[in-house]
Amino acid sequence: MRLPAHRRLTFGAALLAAAAALSPAATAHAAVIRPAATPAGASTAPAPRPDLDALVRALRSTTAAGAPGAMARFTGPGRPVAKAVGVRDRVGGAAMDPRARFRIGSVTKTFSAVVLLQLAAEGRLGLDDPVERHLPGLLPDGGRITVRHLLSHRSGLPDYTDAMFERTVPGFEAVRKKVFSPRELVGLVRRAPRAAQPGAAYAYSNTNFVIVGMLIEKATGHGVAQEYERRIIKPLGLDDTAYVHPATAVPGRHVRGYLHPDEAGAPLVDATEQTASWAQAAGAMISSPADLNTFVSALLGGRLLPPRMLDAMLVMSPTDAARTRFYGLGLRRYDLTCGVRVYGHTGTVQGYYTYAFATRDGRRALAAMANTSNRGQANTALGGTLEAVFCGGKSASGPTGRGLATTPRPTPADADADLPERG
Image (tube, rainbow, N blue to C red; front, side):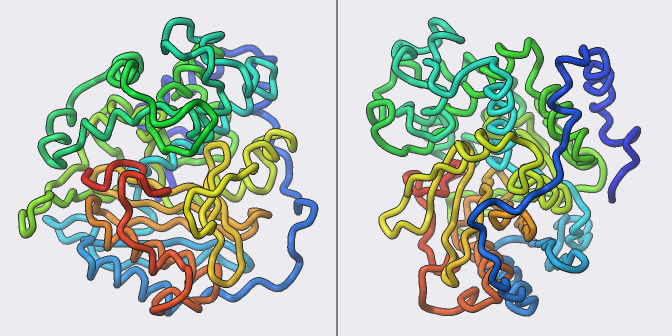
């Protein structure tokens, strides 16, 4: 259900009012949304037609693997197509609804990266600036860790969620209603051993994007919610998207999320209501399939960043031995079995798995969601929606190939482990 702008979200009115008070110079970038253009070198070959039967099979495989429900929405030539299976509320029995809102987890990181890259384009900071220059004293090695290192997960900073969610349900319940400051979260690993030297290796860490949020707030003098709103949400008309921290509810029509405990056979835990304060700029946003389609299409289509910043975002390094998965600046690339490359991000937050990807020109986009987590088989099955849509289903349910549908369960060190798979 797409709400009128004045009814977007109950907590959005204050943000809009604050944005309206900003000077014209401060809002100039947010007001200009350039038309999409085909990037140089983009393939003009006909794209495989999406296999809708394979898409539904992937969604059903997701529910068979333990998700109460799953859904996907695809945009491309012709009208948008949405498919859903299962339920969005196990108690009331409401069917999964592709119009409903949900927690998007680490897809938030791409929103955060876009804002920081806009600030870099405006000269507020540089990608190769050390963290120490803007946040003095935050890190003992802040003089060696750069903004680019944070955005690319090459800072070497450990992930504070590893210890926080070592035990899935107890860890979640301990933070469900807590409100952290960003400095508290960074402080959890401030002096912990580093995973690698700055710039030496990819090591996914939520700590990086908590600091990205701090950099946004330092550079603008505003909270990250206000910057998401005025730079991305309002210009693109994303009526179902917001940074909800520290409110615990997902307003409006929404999907309830269910967390699998570590113990086999234990009942699912409804994780819908939480502050998500442990995630902040690394994972505390909500959205809908339609809004995620719009966002990734606009980003890849060149409507949110100037060309040099989009190019910087798309400089990718491999994150797996097979060299089918890559990470840039707050953005993933998956090389699918049919040769198509898709760009976007995955999300894992208690009760929800999300995929939001588009082709390089932004003309085809997919958003898929399952309302569970700590269930690697379900996450893997949901990844099969990418092959179904972008490859015509050639390997979405097949036993061979390099497709996402055949990847093993993610681990904390895996390219897709937004959280330890324990939580």
